Image (cartoon, rainbow, N blue to C red):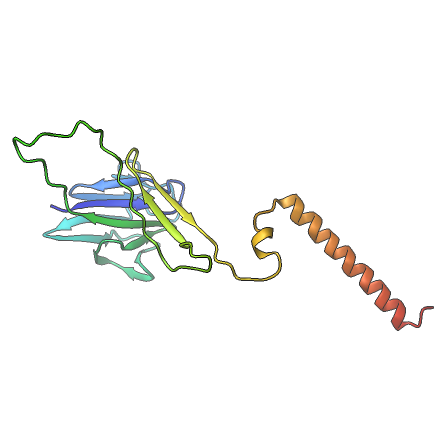
Length: 194
């Protein structure tokens, strides 16, 4: 039987992971298997469950709808890597085949288990670094997700994004003062220096 893992990508609980055994109801209500603190989510919003060898996502009559990608659905078959949205919360689906157990008589290693790390890269921007990297690690089932804003070019683009608010405010005021001085001299020259 395939393991179903749901990773919350956005919202107050971003990074949380849930394993679904047979079915899980997502919603705001406290008794749900996956309770979401999202005002756009209905009390019982959607349900993820097994149906034969398939994993199904079904909207439970929610007001704001359930979406797989950009498509609003009432019922959909989920595949590994699909991202669906309930309210403002995005959820990634991971379907994994169970790990086979050690055959009887085989000795188990005395070395402690090392957490698995999986890297997934998307488009490669300039500089050769991935724009999105996900790291799945053992432990509490958290996902660490890094996003690199791709360089769009322009003056100060890389350096200015690394600066604090005070620096940006002083830079803005300095440019504003320079503009005012240039405007003053242009006005003086246009009026004949009177």
